[in-house]
Image (cartoon, rainbow, N blue to C red; front, side, top):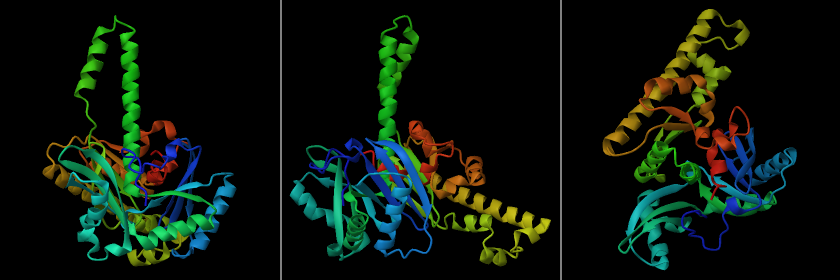
Amino acid sequence: MEIYGHNGIQGSFKGSAEMKNCLGIEIGHYRIKIAYAEKGELREFISERVEGIDRNDMRQYADLIKDLLKEYAIRCRNVVFVIRQEDAYVRRFELPLMTEEQLRLNLPYEFHDYIGNEMDKYVFDYAMIHADKEKMDLIGAACTKELSQQFEKLAKMAHLKLVGLVPAVLGLEWILEYAEERMADEKKALETKLNAEPHKKEEKENAEGAEKSETVKDYVILDLGTQALRIHFFRQGIYDITRTMEPGCEEIEQIRLGDKNKMQELGIEVEEENREETDKEKMAAVLEEQYRTRAVQVMRVLNFYSFNNVNNTIDSLYYCGGGARYGELIDALKETLDLPVRSVAELLPEVSLDEEDEWIDSPQTYGVLLA
């Protein structure tokens, strides 16, 4: 497993953003998402619903990937696979200063609470955030050897060159890092412009004051997933912790699509053309409660985090995931939360491929290509 991008921990690894081209692929519960980038710039995003494929059948997934790349006329062999949140353990922790060899030996024990004595069944990797003369601030990740081998097999069957395996949350972190760098470049350009125009003294002083006081802020990203909602917290732009809430948006989708079993469960006429006004009103009321319930759940998690981190600098909630397509759910979040609610697409406005910003269904699929 490769966790690259932080201080070049994989010394021989060439970051995907520097490659001529690269694919980011995430296999979800119901969809496969493929991002195609050239030198870090998003060129294509594919989100294809997966029907009737055995999750362990790598041959079927390989054939699907080949078919999709052919359909979209994408010629690229390099690939980074995204490891879903539930398939990897990611932790931020501190350790006393030690050699790389000592760190490799100690790293598995940082995951003992999650994997117990089954360390031999996992692969581990880490990224250095900061180190001084006494301690190291690190992000570590672990996934099963079986999963790692499955991805290797999948890449081979799809005739792709495996560049790395990256936990989903780190793909989100690299989007934040990329956005921060862009904002810093914009401020530097503004400062250069103001220096060339001495008469704009007040604007120049304001820009300098903002730069002196600026540090990388804290972020929170809400992933509106099908099976669960996940709130990822980033301290000064670096991954901190995730809070998971169930259920996700699956039930909302079932109701909106008029799923037969769900309609029967709710006592609503199955056939849309036969529904009476009372059925439609009941359906609308059930959906409204679904939206409100999830918004309140999110509010409680944010309040709890703020209570335990009183000095946090979170100023907005950014959302992504399949549930982002439900405008009423986003409206419920905006009405319930004290924070501005924004799409992840606002962090990287320059990468939007269309008005729908479909890539925010799985921004991590693109984010893993920004290292």
